[in-house]
Image (cartoon, rainbow, N blue to C red; front, side, top):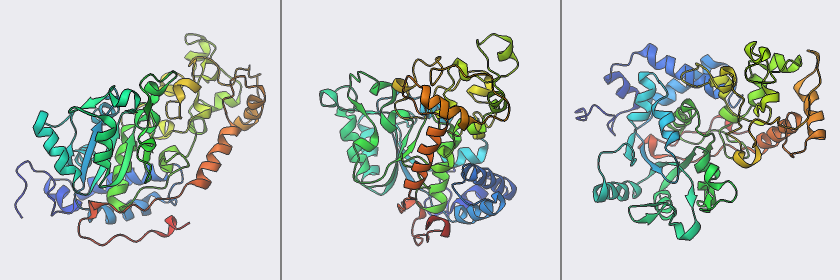
Amino acid sequence: MNDPPDGGWSRGETFLQFVRRRGVSRREFLSFCGRMAACFGAAAALPPGSRALAREMAGKLSAARRPSVIYLQLQECTGCLESLLRSGSSPIDRLVLEQISLDYNELLMAPSGDAAEAVLREASDRPHLLLVNGSVPLGQNGAFCTIGGDSAENLLRRAARKANAIMAVGACAEYGCVQAASPNLTGAVGVAQVITDRPVVNISGCPPIAETITATLTYYLAYGHTPPLDGMGRPLFAYGQRIHDKCPRRASFDAGQFAERFDDENARRGYCLYRLGCKGPATFAPCATVEWNLGQSFPIKAGHPCLGCTERDFYDRMTPFYRRLPGFVVPGLGVEATANTVGVAAVAASVGGVLVHSAATVIAKKRAKKAQPETLPLAVLGDTEKPARDEDQKT
């Protein structure tokens, strides 16, 4: 078999054959599988035992075939794609992202104008995986966002027609984000409000952590279907726990130790940022476990409150950002007090109607109960047989 001129992943190769040809060692490959397995198991979306998961993933990923991908940029700021491109990922992570058959992405591709439109039409006419950044403005017949002379809505519908699966990447694609905030002048909506005949996987965040996008793509490659999802269509492995549950400042919260100002002594000591408006108790996200820039840090760790950007309508529900979430003063608590104890009081005293702590836990349980792993076969497996669903997906 002749290698592609650019050294890319040819359609006839398995993923393992491709990475070997690119000089990736077995140790590097297994290390990557281990990191992905740890990410999948972080929120108990898959059975425990990272080594077993890593071996399982290595076996499944080795046989994966090159997927065809269309990546649309609609009404958005390009921040989600920038997050993905600037994550500082290791070489094998970049191979997963760069060497998929990224047939169309207007921000990265060389063609433009009629040539780009021809590429999109050709890619849309065969089975593919569709990724979408940005909201879909429905106001004024879609005049607020047009690409190639057509509306974002029409572009999305055409690209979704033969898509095996659809990923809405970022808060804009999930529900509209800042553009959809009151009064929503453009009539912005999320992908799932336009494509209603099949499930849409939502990768929440403004922007999402790059590794969350990478891990979801890797799950597709390895298993041939979507990962287990919560009631909002988000992967459970990433959005199954509150930031508060894994927060490095949690001990200070339980002990009643809070920063009152960004520059006070308690802030310098690394105390809890709850009184400065931290939305971590009501936010489901992997920030505290995966962190940003290959695990370097995340806002709370760096000294800034969580804004709750992975939660639906956060710009309306979580503002003002620097006001305490439930609007009440937390008394000095002993270390024996739990977050849920405070949560009960928070719900009773809340003036904003924002659900926190124990209420958020109830929501999480309901989401988990509603969550049903989708089985959307993809073209990524080429001519191989459709993989059987794992035992853990049957329950």
